[in-house]
Image (cartoon, rainbow, N blue to C red; front, side, top):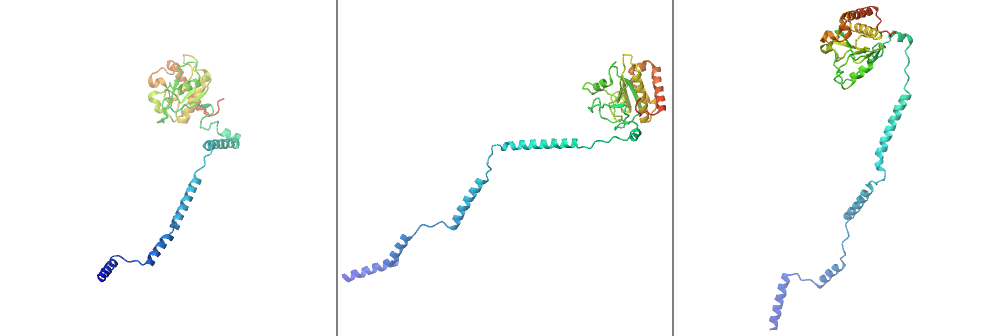
Length: 288
């Protein structure tokens, strides 16, 4: 019985040896020692560098944020004021140090025959109307075939008063020239543009309005003298003669200029006086 028992125990030991590895006492002790001495792992170098980089980025973002100042909103206004002041100083300096115009020599002045910078004689005053599409359309003349004489039909009014009426919003009429009660001559529309005075002849005539002291429509001596001079000057400038003078009446049958329609002999005399003035010449010279 004792032998058999020992044999069975030996067989059981052999089976257990096949199924799992038998550990020696020394190995068991070694494993226990390694477990006891195991320490927590430290962060790797790469993880440390990553943390340092994130801290620096955070610091930079804090530093890069602009610091708000209480008067920052005033800077655009200050810059605008500085610009305006500098422009104003530049304009003032330019005005102060602009070289003065030299007066022309007397001989050159005489040679100019008293013609203004625009090419007009100095006895014609420039008082141009605004281009508004009504009184002054800005359209060009097709040609200058005749010169039409009108009267203002508003007794006792001055040349400038009539000019200002043409400029106003209630007017759609005008003329190239107007001769005043004291003989003053105004040009209101350039002679290469159309006026609004002579109806169907607006495209090819120069128009002249004339002031008169009373309802009869007769022109005063000063007005008449300046009118003859102006008509002769315009004939010279455009290669015309006294035969190219017409009345508004000759175009539409309107009683304009009244006195010179009602008295044809006065109209004939006016044309004769222009012819005589043309023969004298010198119509560009300063009025005496």
